Figure 1: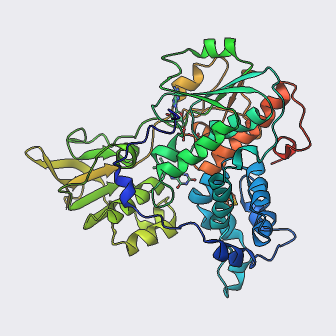
Figure 2: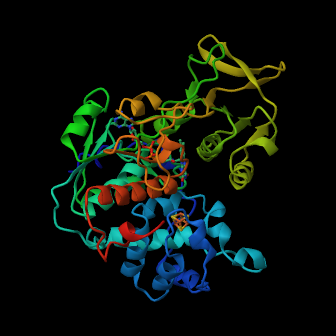
Figure 3: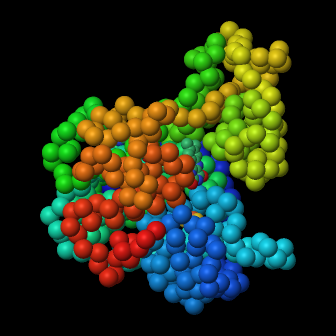
Length: 443
Ligand SMILES: Cc1cc2nc3c(=O)[nH]c(=O)nc-3n(C[C@H](O)[C@H](O)[C@H](O)COP(=O)(O)OP(=O)(O)OC[C@H]3O[C@@H](n4cnc5c(N)ncnc54)[C@H](O)[C@@H]3O)c2cc1C
Ligand code: SF4
């Protein structure tokens, strides 16, 4: 059994949340594909951060060529499977579809079609051989962290014949795709199916190895021709108010990971839940709690709805699921009866009763880890400084990408990984092959 993908406990709370956009059945996929107008200057392609040739992969679904369709997708975006399921498509490709302007028919469901094509090659076992592989070239590359940015970088370089190792500090690889993404978009089994695909390209994954603790940056630089740093962000940010460290209060990323991966974790006795924050993680968490059957779920935001950074369409869906928004709610302390959480007390004297509180106000930065790589600089916010089109840094052997540089989406992390792979290949003297368009392209 594969130790990287078999680490998932059987009893996970996330299993009780249904997929909000289940995969198409073939007839529905073909019908949807046939609505695509094959625009000559397709705005959806420009809106996709990885520049997938969307009209072409959709046309191939329409003609029953699912293998060709998946090849079109994966050659522009190796994480085309998870992106299909987790991209905020309303703000990206689907939002740009010309149908939106006509207000007569809904836009093409690009994400769902993309999932249909890639899931079909995962299911029939042909994914591993879809993109051609170059002969081994003797170059050794290590990627630090095994989230989307590193997975994309590693996969493309493995296809070019490099020997690539991913080092992941957790027991399970996949980054936030496994530990953070809302289960109604994609549960951990979906993320691990994609991880298995990346492994099938020849990438080696070592879990339980923390760079900076178990191995030094200097050692990695000594042993490899190139190092990609895709370590994402740090732990949950804190409010810093009395009672935050006690029972019943969790950080946003901490709680989502428990809900997705902790064996046997349950919401017994939770009737009222409060989530503090106004970004996309906070909105994901209220929706997860509502879908898990908590009768009263409140989202507490310190300013007004108009100021919230989270996606508007997700907030509307949360409302439909029964979530209420409490505006101008500035938390002052946590109130407990004995050991049990009872309420969040607000600065204006209001109290919001709760049995569980999730504080989703952002994550820390891993600037110290990044700058422990000689020559790699960080911004005053603790983000890694890399050249945006390539991920190059002040150290000619180190590249950076993904959330560690300020990205916020799986698709931007995948694009960073692709660009870094292209730049690393060029630096190592690997020639772009004709059948490897990801290395020759400009996006
Ligand atoms: C709760 C939540 C929900 C989200 N939902 C969505 C969504 O629906 N759609 C979307 O597009 N984006 C979503 N995002 C954002 C998205 O998950 C990230 O942008 C993306 O995962 C970034 O990829 P990455 O590879 O840069 O970092 P990560 O996914 O964070 O991966 C970094 C990896 O590096 C490892 N690591 C860290 N330090 C070390 C070290 N010292 N040694 C070894 N390994 C290390 C970490 O354990 C982790 O596995 C969400 C984020 C959160 C927090
Ligand atoms: S990767 Fe994301 S943005 Fe790009 S076409 Fe696919 S679903 Fe749309």
